[in-house]
Length: 86
Figure 1 (cartoon, helix red, strand yellow):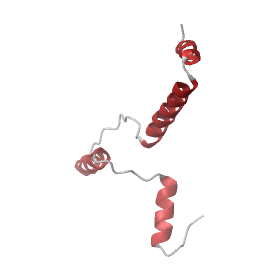
Figure 2: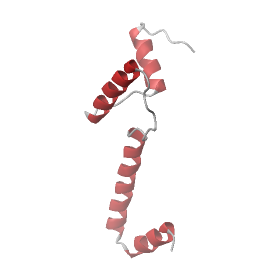
Figure 3: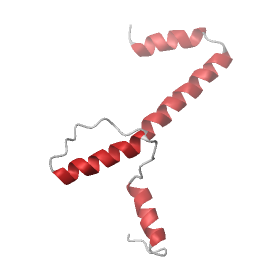
C-alpha cells in the first residue's frame, strides 16, 4: 500500500479536530524544510574554504538564519542608502 493511500485511510478515521492538528503539523514540517538548508555533499578543498565552511556550519548550528539571494540584495540596498541594482 502506498504512503498516500495509507495516509488518506488514516485521515478519514480522524475527528475534524485531529485532522486540523495534522494540517498544522504538516505546515510546521513544511516551514522547517523551507528554512533548513539541504544536506550538502560540498567538501571544501582549500584551508580558507575549510575555515569559512566551519564558520558557516557553526552559525547554522547556533540557529542563525542565513539570508537568501533576495534578502542579501535588500540588505545591500539598505546599507547603500536605498541604491539597488536591477
